Image 1: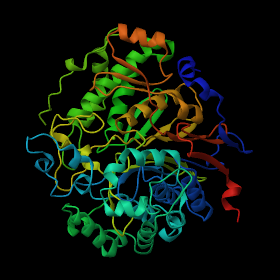
Image 2: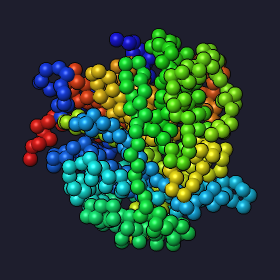
Image 3: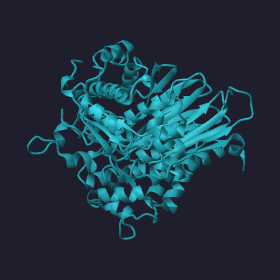
Image 4: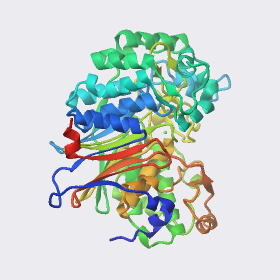
Amino acid sequence: MRAMSWLRALLLTALLLPVLSVRADEPPRRETPPGAAVASAHALATEAGFEALRAGGNAFDAAVAVSAALSVVEPISSGIGGGGFFLLHDAKTGRDVFVDARETAPAAATPQAYLDANGELDRDRATNGPWSAGIPALPAALVHLAEKYGRLPLRTTLAPAIRLAREGFPVYARLEKGYASRREVMERYRGTRAVFLADGDPPQEGEILKQPDLARTLERLAAMGFEGFYRGETARRLLAGVRAEGGRWTAHELAGYRVVEREPLRFRYRGWEVVTAPPPSSGGVALAQMLQILEGWDLSRLEPAQRTHLVVEAMRRAYRDRTIYLGDPDFVRMPLARLTSPDYAAGLRAGIHPERATPSALLPAVPAPLEDEDTTHFSIIDAEGNRVSATQTVNLLYGSGMVVPGTGVLLNNEMDDFALRPGTPNAFGVMGFAANAPAPGKRMLSSMTPTFLLSDDKAIAVGAPGGSRIITQVLLAILAYDAGLSPQQVAALPRFHHQWLPDAISAEAGALDPATVAALQAMGHTVNAGEANWGNLQTVQWDRRAGTLSGGTDPRNPVGKAAVLPAPALTSP
């Protein structure tokens, strides 16, 4: 077994955390799991998933229930006014599918619409209010999952979310703090004030937050499916609310939204098959590059500073290519075969000096001739072996800040994920060029990276929020699983990150010890050690040989929950 010392050293006290598991009494290498596992960023959403499973649903029904519940209890991170990516594995057919529920650009959202009088990016318009919002996609995804992959009607799988919206849930610290940081923007909008100032003051930890308009919107979705959101009363209210604040959505754009099923990206890393997100996610391509670059070294045998240096150099090159090449595959031709090729990775590896940082300025940003806590993730494995890895978002904290009156729908601000002004960084400091410029109906590039990791003995679902840092969280998780860590240890792993520009290593407190920081600086790296924690990784694992299920939830988020139920508990009254 490969040495685990370098990842164990990063874990610190996370090694002391309990591992959630259930052991079956059957012989090794079960063909189906001994129960079901759900990991999400909120305990109420995890319980919603189990409610769907107990009602006779499968992992895809549970995904609808978890997604909708998170949309209610995590308005800071996601909602039905946003979108997401759903990576699915159908155990019966063996098929993997990527459901692209990314928002789309309204026709009025031209690059010129986001420039001020001096031709500079109007950051307020790009991130706040109706102009910052793409056409919502998550309701269409819930309908698609229910109709094509689930067993239960929406009135069953949406019932927990409707109940949570109507009866309320306790405000937690992150929700309160996030509101305080966005208060000035959010209180511009009448619909937002009606939800978050209903009792006369901002949300405070321990208070019960009720969202009756959102409950009614979800009820219409449950009763009428797609028509219940994208046409009819909800659509009329959305269009009127957006127009009242100066936006320019049309009924045709709203009714014309569709999810897209895409083939996942696949590649191998050591003994693992990695199944992950294709464009318009940038995550899968970046993972393929980084892992295939790193496959050229035995990381377990290297000193911490050199190991971190090589991982950072792989990150640097992948994020550079992300910036230049990637966009919506329905609009942009991308050299994906080359970008994900082991030969291309070998060429990138050859350009890495083993003891010197490569300044990002030496990796030019020339266009080719041809996404913190403000996102959420959940992972599910059911008793049949179906799997879901799903990441959903409204982009920044509380999205655009605008709740459309009478709907409870908090709009996303995903338009900022486009290259609204080529060469100008977005809110996450990530730049883009023509490949990711807005166009009517186009999907903005994303960092969301729902992923499956497969070996002869294990099936793992993993993902995380964190904007541009999502991809590197998933990278470190894969390296940790390869080193033999448990799901809970993987979720607790301290993190570091590099994204080409700005040219600096970001690291959580304790992720890099002082000697490693000093050695990296001597190599020419700028190191921002001791940054605030980021991410909210959620993962589940089925170990076929051991006959166990286990889950890991990020300890950075105290309201998250990973749970495992044995098969008998899923069918009990």
